[in-house]
Amino acid sequence: MAAVGAVGLAYAAGFEARSFRLRRVTVPVLPPGMRDLRVLQVSDIHMVSGQRKKRAWLQSLAGLRPDFVVNTGDNLSDTEGVPEVVDALGPLMEFPGVYVFGSNDYYGPRLRNPGRYLLEKVQGRHGLNGNAPVVGAVHNPWEELRDAFDAAGWVNLTNTRGRLKLDGLDVAFTGLDDPHIKRDRYERVAGGPDTAADFSIGVVHAPYLRSLDAFTTDGYPLILAGHTHGGQLCIPFYGALVTNCDLDTDRVKGLSTHRSGGNVSYLHVSAGCGTNRYTPVRFACPPEATLLTLTARD
Image (cartoon, rainbow, N blue to C red; front, top):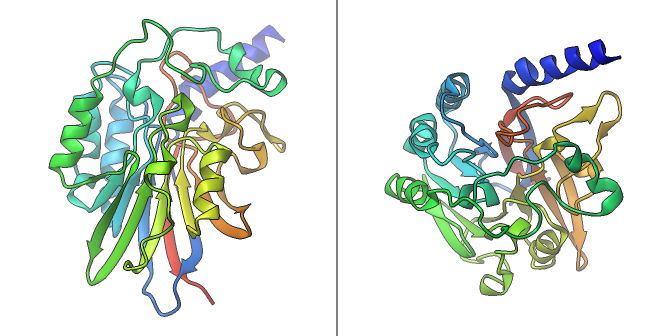
Protein backbone atom coordinates (compact mmCIF):
# COMPACT_ATOMS: atom_id res chain seq x y z
CA MET A 1 0.00 0.00 0.00
CA ALA A 2 2.86 2.37 0.75
CA ALA A 3 4.26 1.77 -2.73
CA VAL A 4 0.87 2.46 -4.33
CA GLY A 5 0.57 5.68 -2.33
CA ALA A 6 4.04 6.79 -3.38
CA VAL A 7 3.24 6.16 -7.04
CA GLY A 8 -0.03 8.08 -6.72
CA LEU A 9 1.70 11.02 -5.07
CA ALA A 10 4.40 11.06 -7.74
CA TYR A 11 1.74 11.07 -10.45
CA ALA A 12 -0.30 13.82 -8.74
CA ALA A 13 2.71 16.08 -8.21
CA GLY A 14 4.99 15.21 -11.09
CA PHE A 15 2.51 14.76 -13.94
CA GLU A 16 -1.06 15.81 -13.35
CA ALA A 17 -0.28 19.08 -11.57
CA ARG A 18 1.58 20.15 -14.72
CA SER A 19 -0.81 18.63 -17.27
CA PHE A 20 -2.37 21.94 -18.33
CA ARG A 21 -5.60 21.85 -20.33
CA LEU A 22 -8.01 24.20 -22.03
CA ARG A 23 -11.67 23.48 -21.43
CA ARG A 24 -14.30 24.87 -23.80
CA VAL A 25 -17.81 25.69 -22.64
CA THR A 26 -20.80 27.19 -24.45
CA VAL A 27 -23.22 29.28 -22.39
CA PRO A 28 -26.54 30.35 -23.98
CA VAL A 29 -26.88 33.50 -21.91
CA LEU A 30 -26.72 36.59 -24.15
CA PRO A 31 -29.76 38.65 -25.18
CA PRO A 32 -31.39 37.48 -28.44
CA GLY A 33 -29.66 38.85 -31.51
CA MET A 34 -26.36 39.64 -29.76
CA ARG A 35 -23.22 38.27 -31.37
CA ASP A 36 -21.21 35.54 -29.65
CA LEU A 37 -18.53 36.54 -27.16
CA ARG A 38 -15.42 34.47 -26.50
CA VAL A 39 -14.28 34.83 -22.89
CA LEU A 40 -11.05 33.35 -21.55
CA GLN A 41 -11.18 32.72 -17.79
CA VAL A 42 -7.89 32.18 -15.96
CA SER A 43 -7.84 31.51 -12.25
CA ASP A 44 -5.77 30.24 -9.32
CA ILE A 45 -2.41 30.45 -11.06
CA HIS A 46 -0.61 30.34 -7.68
CA MET A 47 2.66 31.24 -9.38
CA VAL A 48 5.89 30.10 -7.75
CA SER A 49 9.21 31.28 -9.11
CA GLY A 50 10.67 28.86 -11.64
CA GLN A 51 7.42 27.38 -12.99
CA ARG A 52 8.49 27.72 -16.61
CA LYS A 53 6.02 25.23 -18.08
CA LYS A 54 3.06 27.03 -16.50
CA ARG A 55 4.31 30.40 -17.74
CA ALA A 56 4.75 29.13 -21.31
CA TRP A 57 1.30 27.54 -21.32
CA LEU A 58 -0.37 30.71 -20.07
CA GLN A 59 1.46 32.75 -22.69
CA SER A 60 0.24 30.38 -25.40
CA LEU A 61 -3.41 31.07 -24.52
CA ALA A 62 -3.14 34.43 -26.28
CA GLY A 63 -3.35 32.45 -29.52
CA LEU A 64 -7.05 31.88 -28.76
CA ARG A 65 -7.63 35.61 -29.35
CA PRO A 66 -10.56 35.98 -26.93
CA ASP A 67 -12.83 38.99 -26.94
CA PHE A 68 -11.79 39.58 -23.34
CA VAL A 69 -10.12 37.91 -20.36
CA VAL A 70 -11.51 37.40 -16.85
CA ASN A 71 -8.95 36.71 -14.12
CA THR A 72 -10.68 35.37 -11.01
CA GLY A 73 -7.74 35.67 -8.63
CA ASP A 74 -5.13 33.82 -6.58
CA ASN A 75 -2.36 34.63 -9.01
CA LEU A 76 0.40 34.31 -6.40
CA SER A 77 1.87 31.64 -4.15
CA ASP A 78 5.27 33.27 -3.76
CA THR A 79 6.29 36.72 -2.54
CA GLU A 80 8.69 36.86 -5.51
CA GLY A 81 6.10 35.73 -8.04
CA VAL A 82 4.76 39.03 -9.40
CA PRO A 83 7.28 39.41 -12.28
CA GLU A 84 6.61 35.85 -13.41
CA VAL A 85 2.83 36.32 -13.28
CA VAL A 86 3.16 39.48 -15.35
CA ASP A 87 5.43 37.67 -17.81
CA ALA A 88 3.03 34.72 -18.04
CA LEU A 89 -0.02 36.91 -18.59
CA GLY A 90 1.76 39.52 -20.70
CA PRO A 91 0.41 38.32 -24.07
CA LEU A 92 -3.11 38.06 -22.61
CA MET A 93 -2.88 41.61 -21.28
CA GLU A 94 -2.92 42.75 -24.91
CA PHE A 95 -6.63 41.91 -24.82
CA PRO A 96 -9.33 43.69 -22.81
CA GLY A 97 -9.70 42.19 -19.35
CA VAL A 98 -11.09 42.41 -15.85
CA TYR A 99 -9.87 40.96 -12.57
CA VAL A 100 -10.54 40.32 -8.90
CA PHE A 101 -8.07 39.14 -6.28
CA GLY A 102 -8.14 36.12 -3.99
CA SER A 103 -6.70 35.56 -0.53
CA ASN A 104 -3.39 34.26 -1.89
CA ASP A 105 -2.84 37.46 -3.83
CA TYR A 106 -2.90 39.31 -0.52
CA TYR A 107 -1.26 36.77 1.79
CA GLY A 108 1.33 34.06 1.32
CA PRO A 109 0.34 30.47 2.14
CA ARG A 110 1.52 28.78 5.30
CA LEU A 111 3.00 25.32 5.66
CA ARG A 112 0.36 23.07 7.18
CA ASN A 113 -0.62 19.43 7.11
CA PRO A 114 -2.39 18.88 3.74
CA GLY A 115 -4.63 16.33 5.45
CA ARG A 116 -6.43 19.21 7.14
CA TYR A 117 -7.81 20.20 3.75
CA LEU A 118 -9.71 16.94 3.54
CA LEU A 119 -11.20 17.39 7.01
CA GLU A 120 -13.32 20.29 5.75
CA LYS A 121 -16.18 18.01 4.80
CA VAL A 122 -16.68 16.66 8.30
CA GLN A 123 -15.67 19.77 10.25
CA GLY A 124 -17.50 22.36 8.16
CA ARG A 125 -14.33 24.44 7.86
CA HIS A 126 -13.19 26.05 4.66
CA GLY A 127 -9.63 25.81 3.58
CA LEU A 128 -6.02 25.67 4.67
CA ASN A 129 -5.92 29.39 5.37
CA GLY A 130 -9.20 29.66 7.28
CA ASN A 131 -11.76 32.39 6.77
CA ALA A 132 -9.60 35.31 7.89
CA PRO A 133 -5.91 36.24 7.67
CA VAL A 134 -3.95 34.78 10.53
CA VAL A 135 -1.79 36.97 12.75
CA GLY A 136 1.62 37.31 11.18
CA ALA A 137 0.48 36.26 7.70
CA VAL A 138 3.05 36.97 5.00
CA HIS A 139 2.13 40.04 2.94
CA ASN A 140 2.24 39.39 -0.80
CA PRO A 141 3.09 42.38 -3.06
CA TRP A 142 -0.40 42.48 -4.53
CA GLU A 143 -0.11 46.22 -5.11
CA GLU A 144 2.56 45.58 -7.75
CA LEU A 145 0.30 43.07 -9.46
CA ARG A 146 -2.63 45.49 -9.36
CA ASP A 147 -0.50 48.24 -10.88
CA ALA A 148 0.64 45.95 -13.71
CA PHE A 149 -2.92 44.88 -14.53
CA ASP A 150 -4.15 48.47 -14.38
CA ALA A 151 -1.32 49.66 -16.63
CA ALA A 152 -2.39 47.08 -19.21
CA GLY A 153 -5.93 48.44 -19.13
CA TRP A 154 -7.49 45.57 -17.23
CA VAL A 155 -10.40 46.71 -15.07
CA ASN A 156 -10.12 46.24 -11.30
CA LEU A 157 -13.44 44.88 -9.96
CA THR A 158 -12.61 44.97 -6.24
CA ASN A 159 -16.03 45.63 -4.69
CA THR A 160 -16.90 47.84 -7.62
CA ARG A 161 -18.33 47.96 -11.12
CA GLY A 162 -16.60 48.31 -14.47
CA ARG A 163 -17.25 48.19 -18.21
CA LEU A 164 -15.53 47.07 -21.41
CA LYS A 165 -16.25 48.43 -24.88
CA LEU A 166 -15.93 45.62 -27.42
CA ASP A 167 -16.44 46.49 -31.09
CA GLY A 168 -19.72 48.25 -30.56
CA LEU A 169 -20.79 46.18 -27.56
CA ASP A 170 -20.89 47.44 -24.00
CA VAL A 171 -20.29 44.70 -21.43
CA ALA A 172 -20.71 45.60 -17.75
CA PHE A 173 -19.16 43.82 -14.75
CA THR A 174 -19.82 43.81 -11.04
CA GLY A 175 -17.06 42.39 -8.88
CA LEU A 176 -16.40 41.47 -5.26
CA ASP A 177 -13.26 41.18 -3.20
CA ASP A 178 -12.60 37.71 -1.82
CA PRO A 179 -15.37 36.27 0.39
CA HIS A 180 -12.95 33.59 1.63
CA ILE A 181 -11.28 36.19 3.86
CA LYS A 182 -14.44 38.25 4.32
CA ARG A 183 -13.40 41.17 2.11
CA ASP A 184 -16.58 41.10 0.01
CA ARG A 185 -18.83 44.16 0.34
CA TYR A 186 -21.85 43.48 -1.82
CA GLU A 187 -23.74 46.44 -0.36
CA ARG A 188 -21.36 48.72 -2.28
CA VAL A 189 -22.41 47.29 -5.63
CA ALA A 190 -25.98 46.16 -4.99
CA GLY A 191 -28.77 47.15 -7.34
CA GLY A 192 -28.52 44.69 -10.19
CA PRO A 193 -27.04 44.73 -13.69
CA ASP A 194 -26.32 47.97 -15.52
CA THR A 195 -29.40 48.44 -17.71
CA ALA A 196 -27.48 50.71 -20.09
CA ALA A 197 -25.08 47.89 -21.01
CA ASP A 198 -25.65 45.14 -23.57
CA PHE A 199 -24.81 42.43 -21.02
CA SER A 200 -23.66 42.14 -17.41
CA ILE A 201 -21.49 39.61 -15.57
CA GLY A 202 -20.82 39.06 -11.86
CA VAL A 203 -17.22 38.21 -10.91
CA VAL A 204 -15.88 36.87 -7.60
CA HIS A 205 -12.94 34.74 -6.52
CA ALA A 206 -14.51 32.34 -4.03
CA PRO A 207 -18.05 31.12 -4.82
CA TYR A 208 -19.51 31.42 -1.33
CA LEU A 209 -23.27 31.10 -1.31
CA ARG A 210 -23.83 34.57 0.13
CA SER A 211 -22.18 36.10 -2.93
CA LEU A 212 -23.90 33.81 -5.41
CA ASP A 213 -27.25 34.49 -3.77
CA ALA A 214 -26.72 38.24 -3.94
CA PHE A 215 -25.72 38.23 -7.62
CA THR A 216 -28.56 35.92 -8.58
CA THR A 217 -31.24 37.71 -6.57
CA ASP A 218 -30.18 40.95 -8.25
CA GLY A 219 -30.63 39.35 -11.68
CA TYR A 220 -27.12 38.74 -13.04
CA PRO A 221 -27.38 36.17 -15.85
CA LEU A 222 -23.78 34.90 -15.47
CA ILE A 223 -21.38 34.60 -12.52
CA LEU A 224 -17.70 33.67 -12.89
CA ALA A 225 -15.63 32.36 -9.97
CA GLY A 226 -12.57 30.26 -9.12
CA HIS A 227 -10.96 29.29 -5.80
CA THR A 228 -12.07 25.65 -5.52
CA HIS A 229 -9.25 24.08 -7.58
CA GLY A 230 -11.99 21.73 -8.76
CA GLY A 231 -11.56 19.87 -5.49
CA GLN A 232 -7.84 19.38 -6.29
CA LEU A 233 -7.72 15.85 -4.86
CA CYS A 234 -10.64 13.99 -6.40
CA ILE A 235 -11.75 10.38 -6.56
CA PRO A 236 -12.08 8.94 -10.08
CA PHE A 237 -15.71 8.27 -11.07
CA TYR A 238 -16.85 10.02 -7.87
CA GLY A 239 -15.52 13.55 -7.98
CA ALA A 240 -14.51 16.15 -5.43
CA LEU A 241 -14.53 15.64 -1.69
CA VAL A 242 -14.30 19.34 -0.80
CA THR A 243 -14.84 22.77 -2.36
CA ASN A 244 -12.86 24.95 0.10
CA CYS A 245 -16.02 27.03 0.61
CA ASP A 246 -19.71 26.41 1.31
CA LEU A 247 -20.57 25.54 -2.31
CA ASP A 248 -21.72 21.95 -2.80
CA THR A 249 -19.31 19.51 -4.41
CA ASP A 250 -21.61 18.89 -7.39
CA ARG A 251 -20.73 22.40 -8.59
CA VAL A 252 -17.07 22.43 -7.63
CA LYS A 253 -16.03 23.20 -11.22
CA GLY A 254 -17.53 23.85 -14.62
CA LEU A 255 -20.90 25.22 -15.66
CA SER A 256 -24.00 24.94 -13.51
CA THR A 257 -26.91 27.09 -12.41
CA HIS A 258 -27.67 28.93 -9.20
CA ARG A 259 -31.12 29.86 -7.92
CA SER A 260 -32.00 32.62 -5.47
CA GLY A 261 -34.75 35.18 -5.03
CA GLY A 262 -36.84 33.65 -7.77
CA ASN A 263 -34.04 34.10 -10.34
CA VAL A 264 -31.63 31.69 -12.03
CA SER A 265 -28.03 32.51 -12.99
CA TYR A 266 -25.46 30.51 -14.88
CA LEU A 267 -22.42 29.87 -12.69
CA HIS A 268 -19.01 28.93 -14.03
CA VAL A 269 -16.35 27.86 -11.53
CA SER A 270 -12.84 27.44 -12.88
CA ALA A 271 -10.74 24.61 -11.47
CA GLY A 272 -7.73 26.87 -11.96
CA CYS A 273 -4.24 26.05 -13.16
CA GLY A 274 -2.17 26.02 -9.97
CA THR A 275 -1.94 24.83 -6.39
CA ASN A 276 -0.85 26.18 -3.04
CA ARG A 277 2.97 25.93 -3.08
CA TYR A 278 2.87 23.62 -0.04
CA THR A 279 0.34 21.22 -1.60
CA PRO A 280 1.63 20.96 -5.20
CA VAL A 281 -0.54 18.00 -6.16
CA ARG A 282 -3.67 17.37 -8.19
CA PHE A 283 -5.43 14.07 -8.67
CA ALA A 284 -8.27 13.40 -11.13
CA CYS A 285 -8.50 17.17 -11.52
CA PRO A 286 -5.99 18.55 -14.05
CA PRO A 287 -5.11 22.26 -14.10
CA GLU A 288 -7.10 24.29 -16.58
CA ALA A 289 -8.20 27.54 -18.12
CA THR A 290 -11.60 27.87 -19.81
CA LEU A 291 -12.69 29.43 -23.07
CA LEU A 292 -16.35 30.27 -22.64
CA THR A 293 -18.36 31.01 -25.77
CA LEU A 294 -21.34 33.10 -24.76
CA THR A 295 -24.20 32.73 -27.23
CA ALA A 296 -27.67 34.22 -27.51
CA ARG A 297 -30.58 32.69 -25.63
CA ASP A 298 -33.28 30.97 -27.69
